[in-house]
Image (cartoon, rainbow, N blue to C red):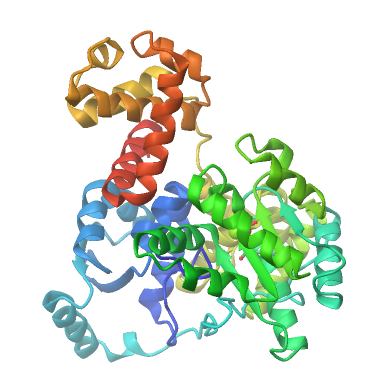
Length: 474
Ligand code: ADP
Ligand code: MG
């Protein structure tokens, strides 16, 4: 999966660079909803480069970059997409999907343009942000736009210190915290600031863990490790986001370790983010753990009310939009998990305000948010995992649990072992016992084998993703 520097979220994954029209605006708001309903890897994989191409009568047509995405979304997410659109525009009662650039899509786009030229005229100018190919940084993330509160003042201070004193003071800088709390924003802001301040004399590179993993896998497969080394070791500042996705992937972690050392020994700055601190990363090799812990660790915590309030105000100012004080207070009180959720809610509220031409009241805001906030994820049982694996391979649970070593059972059983570990964190002895009274080493082997294969084999990783979806039931 090729991701841009920015690994997720509204607009960022879809290039709405030219002045976005009404359709784009509607689609951005709908994506906000979809993003909350599907898992992050799925959202990025399937909704990247999607657009709302046409809205005609009661139908909406979404364009997708390829056939694969089209089929997948048609089969799996049709309802989610329709639901998200309908919540914003109740006249929409059906959606269909076309492949972008396909004849059909082009013809349809032409038709819409002819019919209502106004639609293609920009209604709201979305700021145009281009990822810098040299550094892979998104210029929209700046320190100036990072609002500081109690929950993030330490990482902010550390980040600012790194800008002043690159490579020596806080090295590595390790920022950790939950989803949507501003890790990517802060790290990219440091990169942008360094780039600007030192006018290119200090070479920065930002990379997501997915991208790094892809590069390593590609380098190994094509025997081009030299150019990979060149790319990642020939910088003064390496920023690597969401390192938890690299940990435990043998060859990628190994390559990262060497990259880290090469940079570290030459006093180059390394900035890392993770969803948890090193001590809670069970698969992290000891040698990396001690390196990480030897630098500056800073956690971003959940924002308090003041910070949530200030961020909402700042986002409104950014967009030159207005909401009453009451509504701002209401949103800041109600949404207390993370900024991504807050942004999603704001997108929808502003969209309503604009289309309905009404002043939003707290009651309306409340209804909009209620629709948006997802039911808490339910607890998953081992049997649900087995059920989903059995169904998707057309075997029975009893067969998975049996001692049989038939080939058509071995593979699904290994996937079941993998998922029991990955999703439920069951112990290996426990997994082995559950699946045919096998030794814990069998479960361990299965886990590692599938983890490794899924890295290289896209069909397998997609299959696993699909099973996970079945289990968590969208
Ligand atoms: P993470 O990487 O921790 O998941 P992000 O950096 O992607 O989180 O933040 C999610 C969204 O919230 C982004 O749009 C980001 O710009 C915004 N955001 C997060 N923290 C702040 C902050 N302190 N000030 C302003 N915007 C923020
Ligand atoms: Mg992030």
